[in-house]
Every structure is written in C-alpha cells, then in structure tokens.
Image 1 (spheres, rainbow, N blue to C red):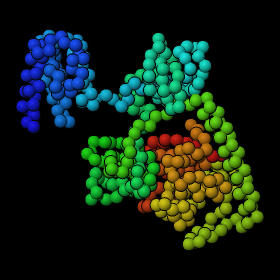
Image 2 (cartoon, helix red, strand yellow; image 1 turned 135 degrees about the vertical axis):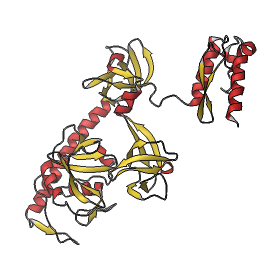
Image 3 (cartoon, one colour; image 1 turned 90 degrees about the vertical axis):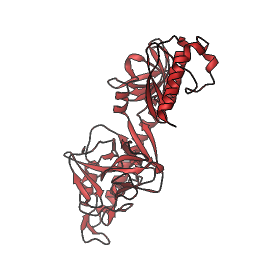
Image 4 (cartoon, rainbow, N blue to C red; image 1 turned 120 degrees about the vertical axis):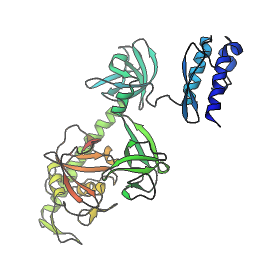
Amino acid sequence: MNRNRKAFRIAACCMAAAVTFGSAPVSAYADLTYKDVPVAGAAAIMSVALENEVEVIESASAGISKNLADYVSAAVQEAKGKKSEYADIAIAQVDNYVNVRDKAGEEGEVVGKLYNNSAATVEATEGDWYKITSGNVTGYVKSEFVVRDNEELAKKVSRRIATVDTETLFVRTEPTTESDVLGMVPDQETLTVTDESENGWTKVSIEEGEGYVSNDYVEKSIEFVTAESKAEEEARLAREEAERKAAAEAAERAAAEKSGKSGSSKASGSSRKTSAPSGSGGSAVANYACQFVGNPYVYGGTSLTNGADCSGFVMSVYAAFGVSLPHSSSAMRGVGYGVSDMQPGDILCYSGHVAIYIGNNTIVHASTPSSGIKYTSPANYKPILAIRRIF
C-alpha cells in the first residue's frame, strides 16, 4: 500500500473525528482496532504504526472526549508494541537485602529476601508498599528500598541471553551462513547477547570473541537475579555445607589413594609427565591444573593431556580430587556455592566459558582451538558472571 495515501487517510479521519464521534463513550469503539478509530486533538502530535514503521502525523485542532483520547493513545501504543520489557520491574537498591513480607506492613511475616540488585515484578501498590513477585516469592516490600520502572538500571543489573536450542551451534564471524565459523557452543548453553540489530541474527559473546548466531537456533530472554524464599535459603545453606564437606572428604580420599603411588605419571598419547594431585584445598586444585598449560583444546573433549574444552578441563581437574562436576559451563554456574572474592581453585564463569582461578588475578583455562590450555590475566578480561567455590 502507498504510505502517503495511508497517511492521508488517517489524517482525514483525524479531522473528522469530533463531528463523527463527538463525546461518545469509549465502549462504543471497543471492537475497533487503532486503524479504525478516528483521532483528533488540540494541536497534538501523534505516532501511528504503519507496517513496522512509525508515521508522525500532526492532527487538526478539534475537540475530543478524554475517554476517546485515552483509548486512542492506549490502542496506538499497543499497536506500536512499545511497552518495554522492563515495565513494572523494581530493582532492590540496598546494602544487602530487603525483607519480603506476607502483608504490607512491618508486622508482616518475612517470606523471603530480595538481595541488592535483584529484580521483582510489581503487581500492585498499597500505600508505600509494593506487592511484588520475584522468583518463587510473592509478597510486599517497602517502596523506598526498590527503584521501579528504571529501564537503564534494569538493563545494568540484568543480562540479555540467548539459550542454544540445537545440539551444536556455530557462532559465525558475520550474520550469514556463508561466513567463517568463529566457534561452537553446545545445546542449552547460555550466551550473553551484545546486539540484536541484524535481521534474523543475534550477536553474542563467546571465548573466541563476538560473533553471530541464527535466531532459529536460540531462545532469547532476560536474566535477572530474583528473591530467595525462606525455604530456598535454608535448603541452599544446607546444600552448600554438604557440598563443602563432601568435596573435602573426596579430596582427602583422592590424595590418600595416590600418596603411595609414583609422584609422576605418563599419560597415554602424551610425552609430558604430570604430577598427581596433592592436598585438598583450592590451592591444590590450582597447582594441579597449571601443569596442563600448553595442552590442546578439543571441542567436547575431557582429556587433560590429549585435549579438552573449557568445561571438560575444569570437570577433569576436579575429578582428580574426587569431585564430580557437569560438562557444561552454564551448569557450572550452579555448582558449589557462590562467593564474591576470588581464591585459588574457584571456578569463574563467563558467557559460554569457564575457567579456574589460580591467584594473582590470573586464570588457567582451555581457551580456544588456536591457543589451547593457557593462562590469562587479568581474570576479568571479560565480564565474570559467577564465582563458584567447591572447597
């Protein structure tokens, strides 16, 4: 359809609105789309969606009922699809956490905690309290402890992610299937989105750099940190304590089993001699991992000598200490327990990547096919999504 003709048609409707519809109740137009509703206003400027574009039209000065004006405004905004994904989101801005209560008031029972920079959806307002839903928690928080409808802050504390929905996804250097493959990522890996402006393609961050993935093979969403219920907190603390104890016992058993063996071993297919793990703490893990620097990167591999990918490397290093970890960098964001300070042996999680911290602001990791297992410093050479501690 010719866009100028369409714009003229809408403008004509605007000028005739007061005569045709006057102050009729808005219910009279309940079944009309924004294209059918005539519009008028006092020297107003109105944006109308036209086939995925926005046409700005100066409407004629004429009277219009407030109900009809409100209806038209809402209809146009809905048609334009302009409601932000971050609408009605409240972000906690506190030193540690704000209590979520079962009713609006200090006398309400605490049902959960909304930690600093965590997000919640505002369901209703009761005085100076918000009724919110965050994760598995629904309750009330005092409005002074959260910031609502601040898209800039919401974007800052969240992560736009693309979750892989195919067995192996190629990340390409350009948004075409003919371009070179920058890297490969496995099914259910979550990658940080850096740009969505290319039609049918999304730019994501992986260890090799930023590249493009087809929208046909990813599911995109926004990832926020959410509230923790009392039951979830109790279960998490108990699980973390059990994992710490199990990890320490496993490491001690592994060290005892190998203490009577030779201090070095020759791995099949490799001429390099490697030392068996000794000790049971994070420093022992870091020391053990460092001896494999220079060995190859192999996608899907788990061999510390013949080739491993990033999660396979971390998994196999910890397996030497009797600790079982998943072969997935995304899944490793949930192992052990989260910390904010880095210590040797900690697992650092990035977008589509994982590494072991060895101290002195340095990590050891199976980086890329071209670089193999190597050291990288500083540890925050790219955004760190989580720090997980096993010991």
